[in-house]
Image 1 (cartoon, rainbow, N blue to C red):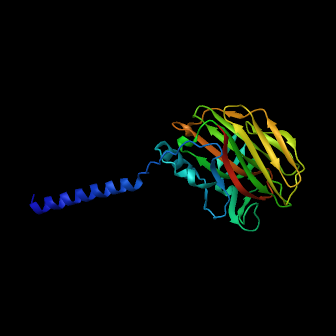
Image 2 (tube, rainbow, N blue to C red):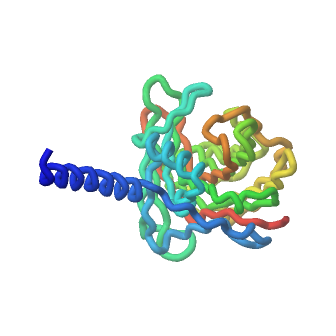
Length: 289
């Protein structure tokens, strides 16, 4: 073999190796820095939408990527404003981006000039429920600690719409057991409920009014098996005691790390009509250690 051919072969091999290394570097997700544990009064997040953030739809592929990167110590998902749309039948739950829409709007707002206008689609055939939820996924392990959390948002439902307002928090301390504190209002009749094993359990009622902003928030000590649910409108304030938290079995998606998930949005029980509503000032904060 001539020296010229040897040189060409070596150059080709080096080029391949360099290109492969470069692609590996591009694909490698940098490891996130661990944050200090949250302090009392500190917000994990507060979304006012005044800066018109991008809202990213949760898809199966993105959810898979969040899991993979979290296990590598990369917590980029914490900074994303998510929209989790889904459809349900009995105890099945499937992410489906077609089930809702969310748009930053200046047509109405609780605080400032902007909110999120949302539309949850009609229930598709063979399903019983569709949902459209703003979401925040917290994966930075130093932020996930046992404490007392307040989670809430402001909502607005235009006349002619009857969505089932839903919000809450998920605590995933391990993949073996999960804990959920979900609550909301059936805007058709003012029934206030908390969730348990995918069922809406009534805990009281309010004199619900359309075309006005109202606040829902929970206070949850993660070391307890109960939480309080609060409601505030221009004409009414109520507090409800929920004497349970929804406990669920293993979820392989959470092997190897802890996680918090937060949601604010609505579901739809009707197969003939989508439901419109607004969300503003969605937040979660530590209120006690």
